[in-house]
Image 1 (spheres, rainbow over the protein chains, first blue to last red):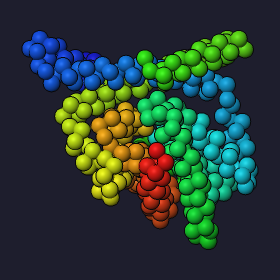
Image 2: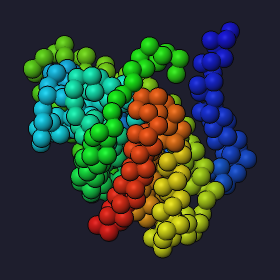
Image 3: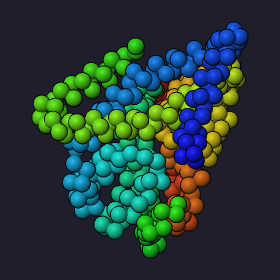
Image 4: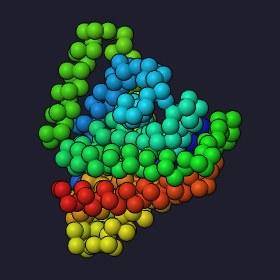
Length: 182
Length: 160
């Protein structure tokens, strides 16, 4: 019974909205009809590219060996190291706080402070699936400009953090044992 | 159907065919992965589309362009940066919102700043970040990214 309610809860807004649409059309409620048109337009916009984007991402995931890149991470220095962390970050998915445990792994593996923060920057704003959605919604021009402006700034932040933390005993804590509680 | 959809569908079809020609099993695994990812975001995505459609109706374009438009100046930038910093919206959901804002007259500067702070600055997740990096590092990182977001917004606005 409880499980049943949880299932319903997931879809509650969709159900409420479906009822709202039905009622709007029955009573010729004009605002409701306008909202429905808004919704239909954005639904069509979404359904015509998002599923295909995820298929592309899925294929990408299968063909590009993330582990292999991960193995080389931390070792690389200079431009090569920066390129590698950026590439690794771009292949990930999920919210920024999901990157903190990876930052810990990078730190354990001896990645430089600079590269750890470049990783966080690239993770947050250059993930490939996200770029795909961004292009779909905001256009290739916006995405390209935002990306090209962001990247040097994040690399700059990496250098700044490294300079700032040089003699400050920088470390990242391992929370993996507590992670289940968060 | 817009141009984007045509490009995505074409790329998707070509990649599927090439991948399938090389390795059937891998391709099927990839398709399944993609489908699962799509299924996971579908309901939250639909919910946000509902919210955006209702808000598009309730908030007239004149209000959006006054507070977030090209002439909103520092105020628009400030609203975008602060709201982006304190809200915790998954990335994929923020794009329909951003597109809706632009459609209703928000400027590119405002939207780029909003998107960047949303992605890079996390006030809500700050306690967690402090646990990983310590107070000083976490706060410095967020402050630097906050400033970077505003610079990114301004430059994007200048270019577009």
